[in-house]
Image (tube, rainbow over all chains, first blue to last red; front, side):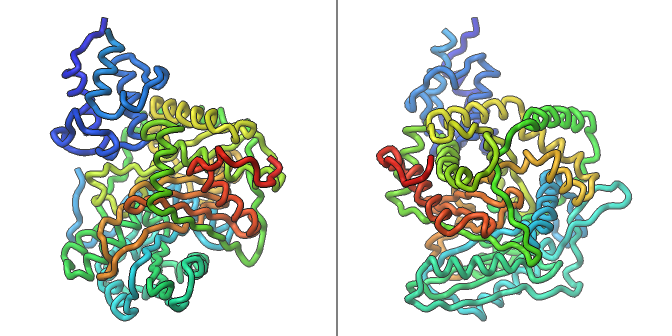
Length: 84
Length: 459
């Protein structure tokens, strides 16, 4: 079973989002809101594709709420719960 | 490794997407008489002295070798490049035209004058930018910069205006640094990767080839075709409502799918009324591909990705179905790496002359031109609050879209406000059609259409 801690997933998401946005990863924090970081619709889809490739979790089909997505931490928690 | 040019270099190799844009320029010129030009407009509080503006433009452009360039081909390796002459070479003056419509003039009247300017085209072969100043409405000014899409894309044009302001503010050295065109390799390697991408793109095109594409006919006119424009500026309250509607109905951050679904809904009655054959729409969507943190290093040329969204005409008025389809298609294309494949494959197209690509686009690859063009530039890349000391009230665009398809819708955001421009080959739409499109667009964007029953349209 693919289990990861929320912290580990947060770090991986931060690295990916920093790469998508072209910024240093220490400028991206787990409590940051994705829209405040400048993520747009294409950026969000790139994040979702990364999540599917990395964790075999397809969040597009899982009926996510806005609260699930809003911060990197909430997204990491959602992924972690899908893995357990 | 990217190298900042401190001295004038003679060539900057064109990437695949640059060459596609040059092909669209050639195609549009053959169809309408003028190339694939666009116009970025600054709406300013207060008036600008024309002499000051002319001097500022001349000083700044004197340092920008890229502006005086043109496409050329390396006869050794056949790769196309942007040929930049030495700045000491003779160059033609840049056009600055002026209109004054008086303080009682309306913003819409200013837009008409700006439309005249972009429809005039660029004065001669070498000048890749031209300017038009409209003074008047409520003592404000509109400064339009017409630009050749081969040289600049929309975000690049916005950033380029920022360079002028830096020049005016006396930060001349920074202004000249902002004008250097970074070097670009010829990309004559990794052929296996390019051909693999070519196969992927070829498969995708073949999947679209049999489509019954909905299009609007482009009239033929020996004297050339002008473009009409409708520009809609949403205030802060309306803009907030648009974004909230997007988040609520399309999903968190799903602004582009919402804008595209609203656009389809607005355009569909026109396509239906004009008797356009075709059961499927293809929206060709241009997306900015710059990384936000390094965008100022990519001022010149085209840094865009293309995505293609296919929607059946019978679903267009069903917002939920359309948005879901757009999101699924976006996910599939990103997962398949399609924008990157298209960019790699387009490097192979550079061997072809522009006229040959145009022929391919007119016939076997017609689907790639789509039913209409669409772009959401997002937050403006013009980051200064003033231009030549005047407060910037708004920044918007007026593009002469590629023809075919000859019609397009373009969004951008300035501060917290949304702007949208409908651009179309004149006579493709009647005035009443264009007005109705804008009304429907406004209703769809803000969610008001949920409460509207009909407009007397046949669908």
